[in-house]
Length: 68
Image (cartoon, rainbow, N blue to C red; front, side, top):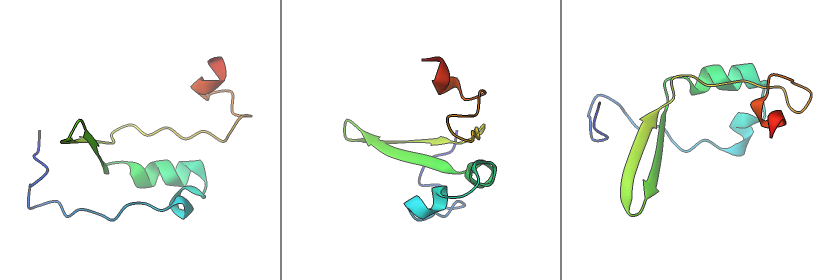
């Protein structure tokens, strides 16, 4: 596991909403390999996106959220 302060990885700016207003497949490919960083209980945590999913909205029957 890499530490957040690893000098080899440069942080990228926060993604704006406009980034997500594209074809879901393009967005998913763009997110692959990116870091997701948050602060939980005052502790900075991070994870690497390794398996993004792309769904085309409510009409996409593969979308698992439809099963709720």
